[in-house]
Length: 135
Image (cartoon, rainbow, N blue to C red; front, side, top):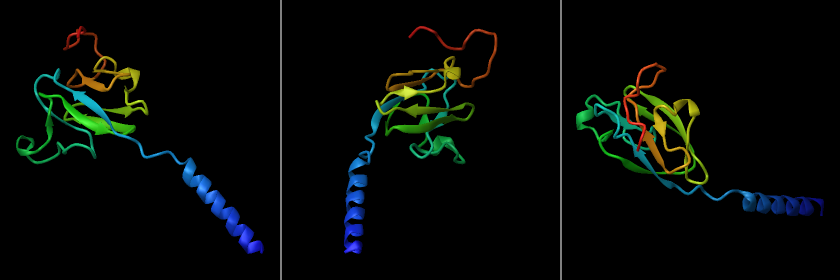
């Protein structure tokens, strides 16, 4: 009798745990736009896009900065990587982009579904930006 009530309690707990789990995260269309980078290069989001670390990027499937790409990304943390610049970004549960505010000089699109990469590299400097501040 005790074993039966223990099994019943365990069964009820397992049903509750299964029902309270979040559904699988839905991927969102996220536009990666690195077309402002001069001169043209290649980029990757590891685990999502083709790698740039092949012996010859010209013959690889790696994405070029010359054209925007839409990626289907579920909410989570990601990294944009080019040969000279990499940074973390998040896709929120609302399907928008977030990234550290320290990247604002070179990265745009916070709160939208478009990640805009403006710089080939980032570092603090006192000169004029190498991109336009107006869209």
